[in-house]
Length: 222
Image (cartoon, rainbow, N blue to C red):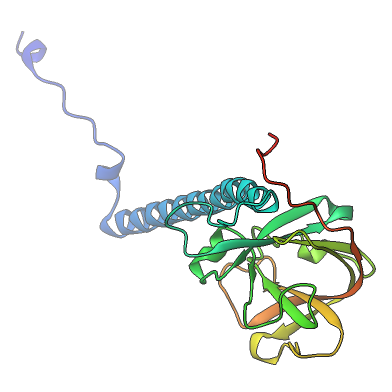
């Protein structure tokens, strides 16, 4: 009976059997795994934010083409929609922002307002993130057609040149160059995690202008 009344000894758990050094190593591994999950989650969030924002920006831009002068996608936005850039061969497009700060690049490409308006004399520069709105820039081939539609309804056709890599402060872009040029820029390399000094630049030359998009006041087709 005495033996029957004895309580079984508690079984040692996994953590209890580890030495102090092994416990520390396990904790480090767990922290690394958690950090990795947070980074992956942040990456998905940023990409989802970029995609959803473009849907709202597209509607705002269409409203501008229909005569609505307000180019703000939401009341507290500190920027306006300015244009749409399209790469027909790649079936890619993005709404371009005007007056955007660095943080606003999360919503779309930005026209650098210190350069000429796209389609005007000189070199207009549009910049965007390499992992969202300009991730397709590496796939643009020399000779590809690029279509730029401005908020005033004018539509310009550009022919892409060779892509090149340069430091951000040695880009060789001349905003006051003669002729009508377009420069699309993003960070490089494309698979890097942190931002560096290098940029990937695709230059394009104006080859023509299509009939302006009619600015008609009215409802937007869904």
